[in-house]
Length: 181
Image 1: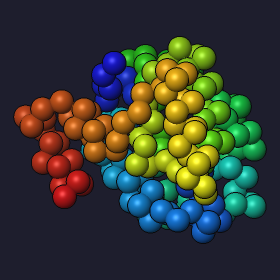
Image 2: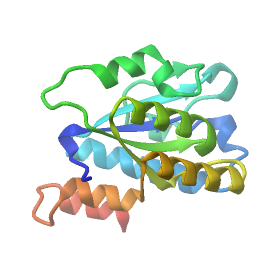
Image 3: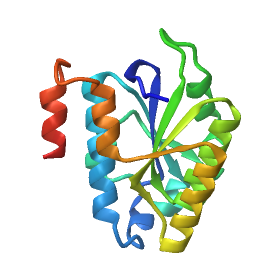
Image 4: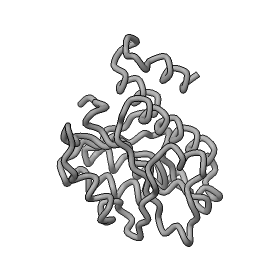
């Protein structure tokens, strides 16, 4: 299964201030999600930002949020339980949505439940393992194993960027390449 920019959605999930405060690798997660969002913008990949109960958990860091459409607030752990998110997934477009690239927090809760719901809808799901995490390593590792067993594809943010480009001849290749250096 390959990722095509025209048929992919980048979903940035719950990268919020109060969650980040308890994540040991918070800076890395924000940096990789930012890189994905920047590349999505360069390559015309649809994107979405979801926030879990922002009044209680805070907002997405401004630098990351500025690269994405306005955040969708949710209280369900799965983004698919949020009507505006589901509407984006189901919206007709010039090219039908085939795959969703997920990044964010926490792997064993909102990422896992969103991925499982997307798989149930028949979409390909790519989990960027270097751009998702949980407060506890065990929760993160077990969730990744569960998701892979359910049919999600584990990948890295850098692999996604270059797969979106396909070739060094892509007009945006040099700009994307600079994101990984």
